[in-house]
Length: 116
Image (tube, rainbow, N blue to C red; front, top):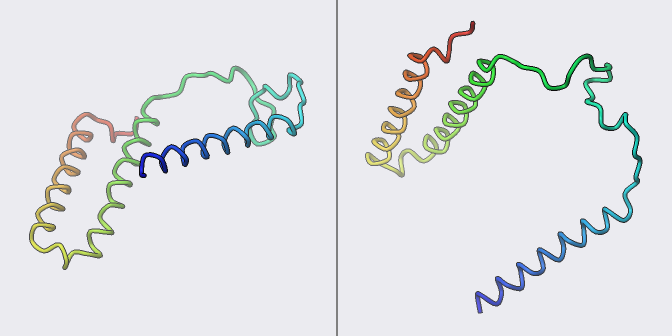
């Protein structure tokens, strides 16, 4: 029973996605001109190449920010149900925090947090 239901849902999903792509391809407007392929930046005509080098430090800093920001989001649900978790939940979150602090110390020692 469950496998038959899964197959029906899978086929229905594939059919709906295929139908949506087919209808979009049939009724979408088509306009081919070279200006469509150019990079667009706030209405200002672009200058130079669209592929240019940038400092990898910006990328690394952003990734570290996102990583620690997302990890701290996990602290809120824990704080909400702290009383239900008891001592085991406290030790689990302390272990989680130790891993976060070790990651921060590692990034700091590697110089990833220095803005040069």
